[in-house]
Amino acid sequence: MSKTTTILAIETSCDETGIAIVRKTGDKVEVLSQALASQVDIHALTGGVVPEVAAREHVQALQPLISKTLTEANLNPQELTAIAVTVGPGLIPALTTGLMAAKTLSYAWDKPLVPVHHIEGHIYSALLMEEPIKFPALALIVSGGHTLLINIPQHLTYEVVGSTQDDAAGEAFDKVARLVGLPYPGGPNLSKLAEQGNPKAYDFPRPMLKTSDFNFSFSGLKTSVLYTWRDIPDNKKTAAQADVAASFEQAVIDVLVGKTRKAITKYQPQSLLLAGGVAANKKLQHELQTMVATHKVPLYCAPGALTGDNGVMIGQAACFAFEAGRIQPWANVDATARLPVTDFSMPLG
Ligand code: KG4
Ligand code: ZN
Image (cartoon, rainbow, N blue to C red; front, side, top):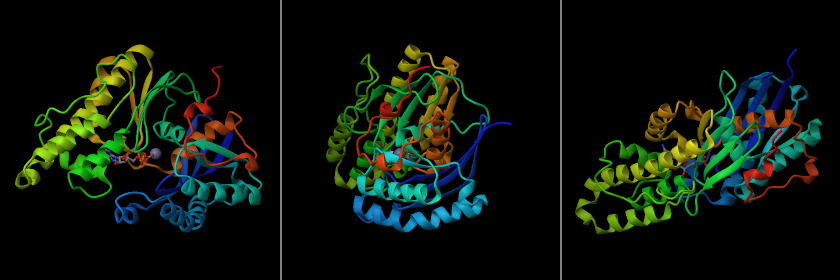
């Protein structure tokens, strides 16, 4: 009989309340139920996430979503093995709401608490596969807060080999979108508009593409777009919007794909994982797919609905973490705004 782990997971690090019940039986991971409350419409009013507003929305969403996932999974709380929660990085007021809910349930239902790192969650969102993936794996995590290349020699072991020196890729998408007058959330709107533009119209820089390390920088690119946009006459701006979007997007993708190619050559992974909000970008997926094919490395991309923040990814990571012995007394678990994923890495063994 295979061991079974059933976890209720809570994610509230930013502006999505994500709840999921995930079950791992042997190597097989399945999602029993999931629920997501997005705050996009609320934060669109302010053009970005206001932490206290996000926290208030999480508080309202948490209890109904938890009840809903239990009902849909047809489970009573005693059938759960553990409660998992994102403890960082993220917005402290937002993280704290999920953490308080998780601690309360852990105490009331007498279930162990499994702390999960948000980036670990993104990594595991690309691992919801029929068959187990092969290690070592390399992960490209591209979100609103992070741009990371992570070498993963085995489950739950993380070596960050590259990161951004300034803006994250998603952040650059969001800032450029705002610059050219697109509404929040900028990234998806900008990439949609880019489909109608010419990616060669403007020759934007590819920052750090030629450096021998695996780090990124997007702030110079954003500034270059700013100057180009400023110099386009007002009566030509609408016509130029799609070309600027497409040329910017191409510059970001060239850097992401170029650096990932370099990391593949060095780390020789058996699998490439792509996850985080920007992983929803179809052009990025396509160009990475073309690149990895020449290296004969399979690409595993988080499913469309799971590229952004959600509870499923936390539940998935938590199943592996719990089975590896990660349980923390709830009194010792805190929310942390800045938290390296390597703090959660298990030693090689
Ligand atoms: O992972 P995520 O949902 O939240 C964070 O942990 O940051 O990522 C959100 C980011 C935002 O910056 C958003 O603009 C970006 O992902 N994003 C995209 C696309 N869809 C979402 N960026 C480019 N192209 C997209 N299609
Ligand atoms: Zn995220």
